Image 1: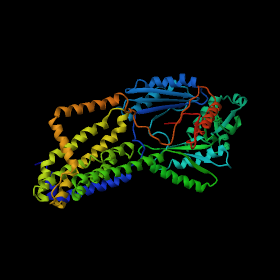
Image 2: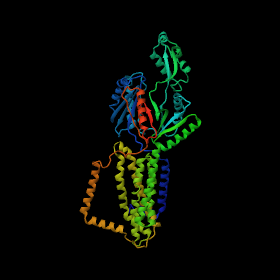
Image 3: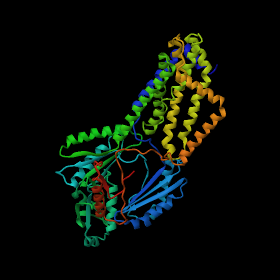
Length: 585
C-alpha cells in the first residue's frame, strides 16, 4: 500500500533511526532553551497614551487633555474599550482593540490621532507617550534598599543611579521601577524686578531653558551641578544673553512626596523588576540575583533585601508538572505491561513516549511557546494518549506472531493491516485539540499553546508508531510459546462487552443519561466555570482607592491601618505597601 511506510522502515531501518535521533537532539536542545513562565505570553492589542502636566489638577486635565484624546482615538477601527484614569498631573488613557487587529497598525494610528490633536492640548504638557501595553503582568521580583547610615534621599539616588542603571542591562529585564523614596527637584525662583528690567517673562525663560536642554549634545535633562545650571545663557528679546543665575535663585531640594513604600509598617526605598516578553522568569531571576549579590559585595553598607517574588511559585509549578509527568509516564508503561504481559513488547511500546514528547519541544520552540501551566498541562495530559498508536501496532504484530509467523513477517503484514486505523486515531485527536488554539478571544490566546502542543505530540507519536514501532518489533520481538491464559478481569470485561452488544438499546440509553448528567453538572454549577482554578501562590494583592482629592497623609493612615490588621493573622509573613498610586499591571 502507498501508506505503508512501515514496510520501508522495516526493510531499511537506518533512515528511520537517523530521523528519530535527529528529532530527539532537536527536542533536547530546544527544551534547554525554552523559557519557564507562569502563564503563556499573550499579545492583546492594547495601547496606552500618557500625558503629564506638572501642577495640573485632575479636573483640569480631564477637560483639557483626557477628553480630547479619547475623542481623537474613538474613531479608530476595531476599538472595543477606552478607559482613562486621571490623577494630579497625570492623564492615562488605555484603548483596547479587537483581537484580530494588527497591534503595530493600531499603535501607528493612535500616534497619528494624538499628533493631530496635539495643537489643541495645553502647551505646558509633556510630549504624549503612546505605547503598546505589554501584558506580562506585575514585577517578578521586588527588593528593598536598607541602610541605617543613609537618608531616604541618598538611598533613592543610589537605587536610581546605581541599581536600576545596572539592572536594565541584564538580559531579559524589561523595566525596573523605584517604589517610594524621594525625588530630586531643582527650584528656580525668578527675580521679577530683573525680568522686567530685561524685558523677559517667566514663560520665555522656561521656553529658552527647554530649548537649551533639547540642544544638549548629551541628551540629558539633568544638570551636572547647580553652577552649571546657573551658567545657562538665556537669550534676551533685544539681543544679547544673560546667565540664569543673574535673574534667579537656584536651589537643589527634594520634591514633595507623591508616593510611598512601607514594609511591615516601616518606610523603605524599594524597586520592582519586570521581565521582557518571551523571557524566562527563572532565568531572569537567576541573573538578577547574581547582580544583586555583586552589588552587595561592592556596597557592604547597603542591604538589598528580597521582599517579594513570584518566581518561587513559577518554579514550584514547573517542578510539580515535571514530577507529575514522570509519574504518569511510569504508570502508563506499567499499565501497558500488565495488559501485554510481554517485557519486550512493553519496552517497544514505551519508546513511543520520548519519541513523541521530546521532539514536541522543538515545535514549541519554533512557535515561541514557553514551559508554563498551560503547555505543561498539555504535555502531562497527552502522556497516556501517546502510547495508543504504538500499543495498537504492537498488539496486532503479537497477534500475527501467535499465528505462527516470524517477527519480521508479522511486523510487515500487521503494520500494513492496521496502518489506516492508526492514522485515523491520531488525526482524530489532532482534530479535537488543534481547534482549541484558534478560539477568538483572550482565553484563546492562553490556550493556543495547549492545543498545538498536544497536536504536535500526537503527530510525532504517529510518526513513531508507523516508522519505529514496527521496525523494532521486526528485529527485537521473539515468539511467546507460552499458552495465553484468560484472567478473571479479562473474563469479566468480555462478559460486559457481550452484554452491551446484546442489549444495544440499553447501552445507548445509559450513554445518553451519562451525557445529560455531564451537561447538567455544568448548568447547575456543580462544576466551577472560572477561567482558571483557584491557586495558592502564597501572595495576595489588595488595591484600595481613596476618594479623589485625598491627601497623601490620609493614604498613609489607611495603609498603616490595613498593615496592622493584616499582621494580626498568623499566616501573614510580611505586608508590602506601594502607596500613592496604582501599580502597573
